[in-house]
Length: 289
Image 1 (cartoon, rainbow, N blue to C red):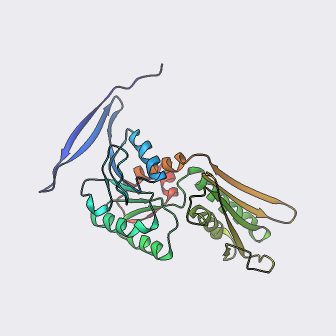
Image 2 (cartoon, rainbow, N blue to C red):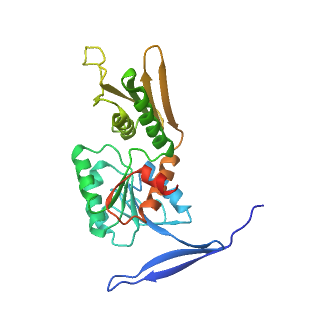
Image 3 (cartoon, one colour):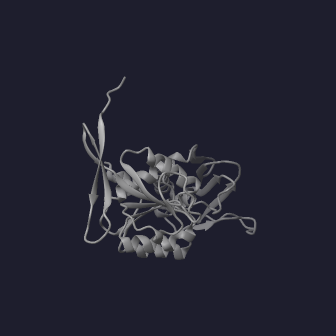
């Protein structure tokens, strides 16, 4: 049997001016004090929101202050609110796995309360992205097209490959997801295409379909294709097609847990960030070095 570390949980209360006192949880172990971060899960009733909640409830460094979801369905032992403005309790960070339509209220809430925000939602419009960048001027905001460590490594490998291969290879991105996924192409596919764009010696054009294009492939294109079906969690492949040879880089997700683990890792990082700005998984990974 392994070593058993004894621990106790203490609850202190923080009282500032005339505001209601809020509980601050700390765990005392033989290794020292662990302060439990208070998180809010936006989209708490969705597939990913539930996965994040289940992992967070079993994480000794975290406590869930509340959930936000349009149907206000309470599935676990924390309150759920239909709109962010309904919750006035304490929180260190908000983790969002909802829909782009929830962005406006979420940004307003976090800006007003000065709470760091972790955006894991995809499918944002150009106007949404503008609003996110604007908010990041005064608020710490984390955004990534994919929360998986493996995908972020893949993006780095894509960038390195493009720097070496340059004009000699055509670049194509293919992604496959479950039949319920609404946006296409996926945020991750665009993230991988953007990684290629950063290293290519030309400004690429993203091509999402070829049915209407009766012409040969142009050298400046990056083709992006999407498949929807069954229960595929997520597959992303970047193809480098050259003369008489092909290089393929691929990532397959077998469980949504990998995205939830990454989201909570980002939440722990962002809870300690005080400077405004737009952060991503590279900042999280670099902080661990």
